[in-house]
Image (cartoon, rainbow, N blue to C red; front, side, top):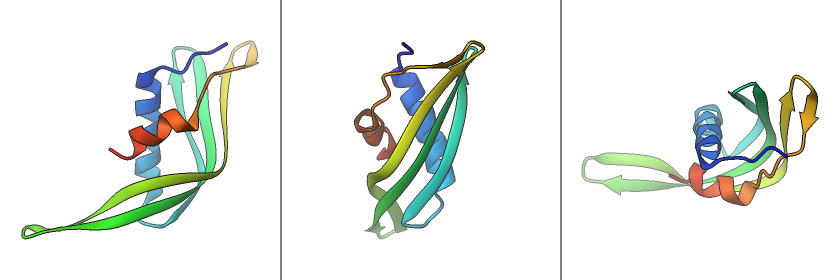
Length: 96
């Protein structure tokens, strides 16, 4: 079984945040490699945002991500392998 590290959750979160754009819904895939293992998250997500206002300006902040559907695949040269991915562990990394 492929164990998803905290570093991999962080990397997936970075790639997802880059792919989100400014909307309230995301549907797509992000990929990264860990050694010779290809990791791919395909998901449909509802994105909740709020505006933080300061005297210096305003910032639109991601406040929650709710998965409608997701799959996380890990593939090696020998084929797909099981993994211990958890969206519950990914969510806090997205809300940084």
